[in-house]
Length: 245
Image (cartoon, rainbow, N blue to C red; front, side, top):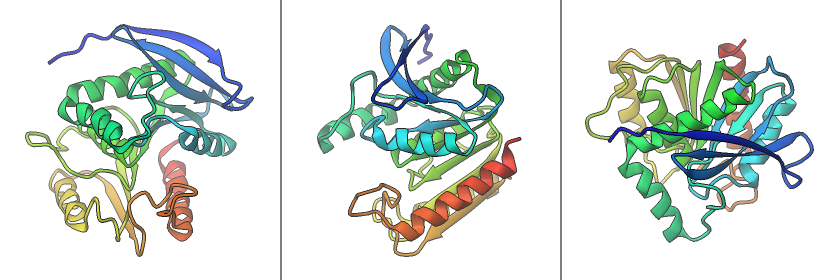
């Protein structure tokens, strides 16, 4: 199904998000969404950040602010809709499941977020997409769509390729940061993705961290692993330096 998307941009200063960032309310096909944008400079490279299965929360805002402190513009996308921030597992599965079943819609929502960032003056021609868990799966979906970005990065993200898809039109380099102890997304899936990328000649780097379970970067969580978080973040920032200018 082809989506024709009407996007309306409204900018609201967010007191909760911090003085340097803004909550950005925009509409996609008549439905409101609320992202988060922070930019130290109009010329700064852009990071498009895709949230986990609980929607755009303080966690993504914190990561966006960390990147802004390093000199990057960041647009944290909203793929669920304004005010939709599920806390129950059943609801999280519902919202992610709807997008997993409708990959065209997932791609369109990510593109709309990128278009919104562009409307705010972000440099979309010098950009990388990154995501956590569900957001990592969404980033790979965007990569398979042929999106013209410099790179695509996943942290403990979903790695499966839907039937009928491949990486034949992927542009940019891929960086996959994963936990070897991830029981949700196993090393079999990790290896299968490596083979798929190699088959299509896609430039990629894939790293696993021993003892790191699923969601190993989530601060304050029982799954948080400081060593893996710091190592993966370091490699991520190096990747940004290598691919953005």
